[in-house]
Length: 305
Image (tube, rainbow, N blue to C red):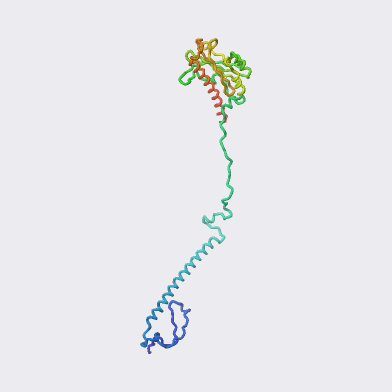
């Protein structure tokens, strides 16, 4: 058989190895002449062959890139379809997301929040209220309850407790202008107690009224001659029965309290008798504290009850 030279023979097609066989198209019939008409020795045109090879390689790369992009889009579409199918199938999911309420069931941020009425602790009970009226002042009352113990310490001074007295006829336990003052304002009871320190003696008297207004008026009506009678006995000599003594008057709540202080040896009290003045002030202060404590105890009991 005679060998065939390039460019000779019947109709030839240029077959591309990168194109599927079914897509290969026949090429127009080539003239029977060499590839390179300018080459008379029938040698192949190597430059043309190189260009053709480069074109095929470039087309191959483009096919790879395009095919990869299409594959990526296809995979992404499959994943999206799978997600939509899983979540949009209308069946409840077994996972936590399947237990979430729908958007319509979730409260919006504008939902009304619960409100609470402001609360505050009740105001504390005023102790004075319980000793300002007979209607509230119900605690037991006696000389020993109002003035307990056998002695009293005020600062550095110790006073010994002496005799006590308790009467419902207030005027009989007072002298000077005080009986009239007590009776006119409705005094119902007068409690007295005496304390001594050396040769100084003080009797403090607490007059009881039904209301604070009565006690306050009694205090205003009293003058320098309104004096509570001293209580003696039980080792305490009589005092302030004829000598000059010092007296005080005050009130708290429905109680008015008075003091009379002097010497047990009958001497007159002068401006230099500082011990007598101090003793009278101490016993007046003690009477005030005891009346206030009476109110505090009753207020505390009412708050706990």
